[in-house]
Length: 357
Image (tube, rainbow, N blue to C red):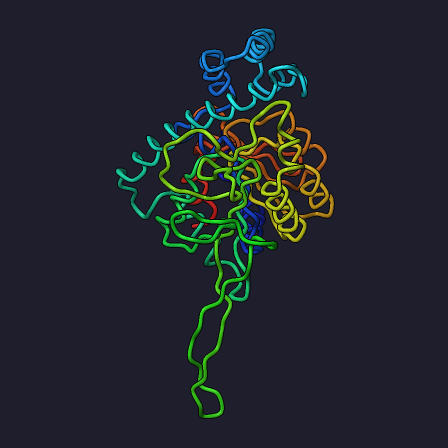
């Protein structure tokens, strides 16, 4: 292995950070904290959904799809056609059982994070602070997108002491803002002008968190979508589940439509992109990102393993920097080169210490 990485690689990475990149966080990030990936979620659903189904039609449709679901969750669920008898009951059961698993695993992960002593702070909090402090003072916010249901990013924002905007307002039962759901925040200060002290309103940066697949903290209620923290109930969670309802939910549900629209605006305006644990397997995000990459937007991918979609993306856009696990070390793919390092730079903590901090 080659221990020394070229100076140009450091320059490229640091240059992308100076552009206040949009942060895109995928399931690989949460898996590092014990949250289930698609395989573990498939196993959970295969073992639990049948027992909560009540109609014969739903049980038959589920039984016919179960073997395919065990092989590939989303492909298997797509074998259940929309509109089939029992389909609505299956989707409701999937949503409830998914929420139950994620709620339990998130509580365990957050408890562990809060008990850990991290010198200098946890890596995600340090990353968020770095992005926040590096953004221009007149920036409206730092854009963070996650396809994960859990609330780990919300926790790391709190640990970093950063102002967070999820698109909801309130305290205990937070309501979705009227359009636009993300709005500029201002602070009231006293400024001296022409020898007089007058009130002035100045733009305050926030972390804007976009969750296009929903969140275990979101509920669907008769009064509209709500964000409710520390609610242990699993029914009514506003999450887009894999399978036949995925795109229907995202397209016809007002909450998800508003979130996706705001997210696409942020991506279209992005000057750089930083991806953590994201495999580029989500069609909701691919289109706008690929257009920006085709225009030469700098991008960095940090994840454990490459996916076929990442390999294809690197072939089409060789300027993208990708860092993967390679044995006990890592490999950096960039401009057609595979640059090896004995350090585990695919881990966020090591990546930050090596290239940014």
